[in-house]
Image (cartoon, rainbow, N blue to C red; front, side):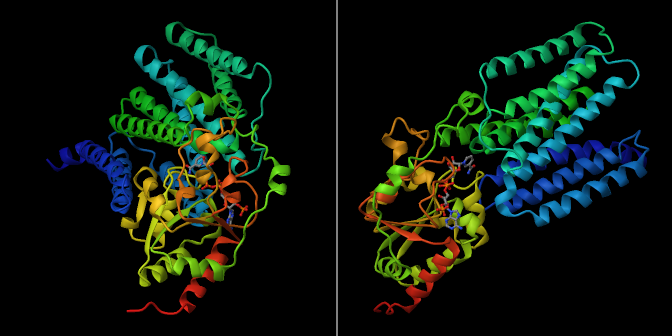
Length: 466
Ligand code: NAP
C-alpha cells in the first residue's frame, strides 16, 4: 500500500503542481495577490521537481544533486545581486538556459538508441528547433540589453528574405527527418541552422523592442518545453510549457498593444534607427525650469496631484522618496494619485513593483485608461523620470516613431512638472514637445535627490489650517 503511494506519488505531485501553477498565474495578475502567486509558483515547481525525482527509473541521483548545486550556485547570487533595472536582460538569460536545456534533452533523445519516429519525432523536431533558436536569440537579446553589442538595429538589404529562407531550410530538414531516414549530417546541420536563425532574428531588432521580444522568446521556450513533454510523454512538462508559452505570448501582445505596434513591426520594423532627435530644434526652443522650493509651493497648495513615474524613477531608486512626498502631501489634504502606463520603465509591471516596494497603497495606483480623463481635473501632473509615455507627439505627429502609442494625457493638467536630469530623450530617442509647453516646469536633477529636496521644502511649508 505504502509502496504503491510512493510509486504513484509523482502523479499526485504533478496534479497538485499543475493546479498550483495555474493559480499562481492567476494571482500574479494583481498586486494585492502577487506575493501569494510567487509562493504558489515556487511550491508548484518544487512539487514538480520532487515528483520527477521520485519517479520510477530515476537512479542517477548523484549527478542530479551535483547539477542542482551548480545551478543554485549560479542562479541564487544572480537573483540576489541583480539590480531591478536589469531584470529584462536577466530574464533573457534565464530563457536562454531553459531553452538550451530543452534543446539538449531533445538532442540526447535523438541520439539515444534508434532515432525516434512518428509523433515523437515531430515533437522532438519542434522542441529542438525552438530550443536552439531561443537559446541564441535570448543570448543576443541579453547582449543587446547589457550593451555588450550595439543596441541599434543591424540591417542590410534582403535581410527578411535571408532570415525566412534560413528558417524554411531548417524547417525543411526538420520535415525530412520526420518523414524519412536522413544522412548523419542532417541533424547537426538542422541544429546549426536553428542556432544561426536565433542570432539573425535578433540582429534587426533595436534595444527598444527587446523586452517585447523577450516575452516572445519566453513563449518559444515554453513551446519547446511543451513539445519536450510530448516527446518524453511527461504531462507536467506539457502543462508547464503550454502555460509558459501562452502567458509569454499574451504578454507580448499586451506590450505591442501598449506601444501601438504590430508583431511584424516589432520583428521586422527595425524600430530605433529612425528616431534621431532633432537637436537643433531642441536647442532653439526655450523651456521653463523651476527649483525644488517652487515645486513644493505648487504641490503643497494643490488639491489634486497625479504622479506619473517612469524609467528615471527606477534608475534613481526614488520610489521611497516618492512615498515620503505622497505622505507629506496627503497629510496636507492633497489628493495624490498615481498614473501607471503599461510600458513605463523597462518591463511590464516595473512601476507597480517599485511603488509596492515603497508601500504606496495599491488603491492610489491607476491604469492609464482609468485615470486619463482625470488629468483635466488635476492641478498638477508630476512626471518623475518618465518621457516617452507622456509625449503628446504620439497623439498627432504622424512622422513620430511612437505615433499611435496610447499615452498618459499629462498635458491636460493645469500645471505639469517634469523631474529629469537633462533635455535628453528617453528610450525611443525622440524629443518631447511636452517640455516646451507653456504650462510645463522642468525640474532638472536626479529623481531621488530632487524629490528628496521637495519633501524637505513641503515639510518646511506652513502647516495646513485645521
Ligand atoms: P523613457 O522614455 O525611457 O524616459 C526615461 C527618462 O528618465 C529619460 O528621459 C531620462 O532623462 C530620465 N532619467 C534617467 N535617469 C534618471 C534619473 N536618475 N533621475 C531622473 N530622471 C532620470 O521612460 P518611460 O517614459 O518610462 O518610457 C518607457 C519606454 O520604454 C517607452 O518608450 C516604452 O515603449 C519602452 N519599453 C518599455 C517596456 C516595458 O515593458 N515597460 C518594454 C519595451 C519598451 P534624463 O537622461 O534627462 O535624466
